[in-house]
Length: 114
Image 1: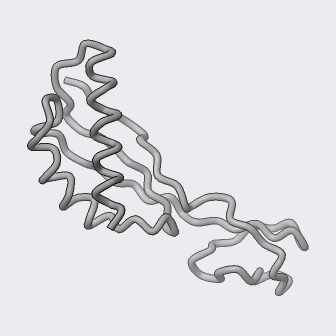
Image 2 (image 1 turned 30 degrees about the vertical axis):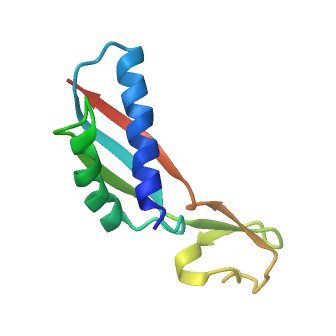
């Protein structure tokens, strides 16, 4: 249940940006969330509704979530492939010499100020 910590971090970051930039209200916050980040978007949305009520600038703000596809790179054949479909074994050459390129991160992509 690290979604609550994630939401608290996002809210703290956005609130700090509001103060630094003399903003009065935020309309929405867009997060990009990786497929293999371990973060469950539904939990983010639920915690967001609870946590935003305790803020100064985000009381009515919408949370938008955009997925980041998990992509893995094969060192053997130098190709990329979708991680969720094939996991660690390369579908092109069968190698296990692979690593994740993207898909385990979350990023504050956009803040809509009002």
